[in-house]
Length: 379
Image 1 (cartoon, rainbow, N blue to C red):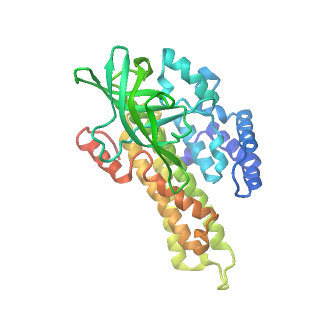
Image 2: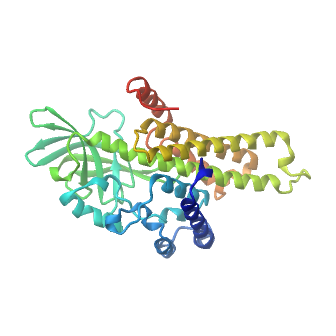
Image 3: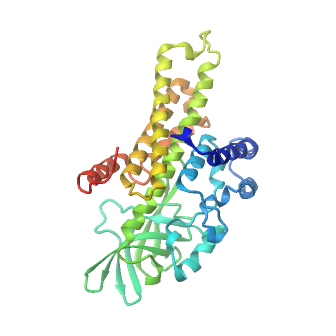
């Protein structure tokens, strides 16, 4: 449970809340709903560095002070609870898929990623109707890559993409999957389409047409691609779960204030039994979501296989957040759907959470497969 954090983590949480009150909230108010300016983003980063938050997602070898899973989960939930767009500048760039890179791949990319000089994207999703998944033919020390990734988030501004490919030799024999770092400016890398989703995220469809990269751009070894991709996805699922519960907590506070305020009927809305029942369900969902989130974060620190537990947490927390935000819109009324209202923005944002790193129904299928066929998972 989030109530059973140790003294060290409680101090970190208090420091995070102080950072929100002293830095994020005043700067957010200064923006007045307008675009985030470069000077505001830089101020957040500088303050985050001085207070030690920026380093929480960066390796110790590069000057970071990496948080463990429980601490990072707690911080992500706390900053999401502030409901400010500036929270995305608090943590420094993490290594992502390149956390385990070695040799030339590590030296060529990792320092520049962590300094913010370059950024990457993740190419995993295949388009519907593709003739075959993205593949690579190994010729000597090179990979010749063809295929398409349909939903590369941030791909338009990324300097490289870590792409999951199926590798075969020139005779067509399968060698296994691989995660390959592909520079976006290489010949044959084509952005087929740019689009944005309703919560404001930017994405691209990306084609690979006889793109040649050296085998040294493989993260790890050929044959390790899918496990590495799923490991990265698992980390993102837990991050999304923490953000979803943080959103729930902000919504509860917002709705509680609304229910206590005077109403045109002469008595606060919170005096009505039907309103209380709906608000109770929102609190129950949030309580259950937070309990699941923190249990899974603690399990992650044991080193156990928690793929199914992370799936269960991501499905429940994001769907609970959807119900909580929807309930809040219903209680607040039509004004909550006016563009610019915080609930209107959250309503669009939280719907996307049920699709990020796996749609809920697909994850349900994977969870049961993990149990019935692999004997994984617990309750």
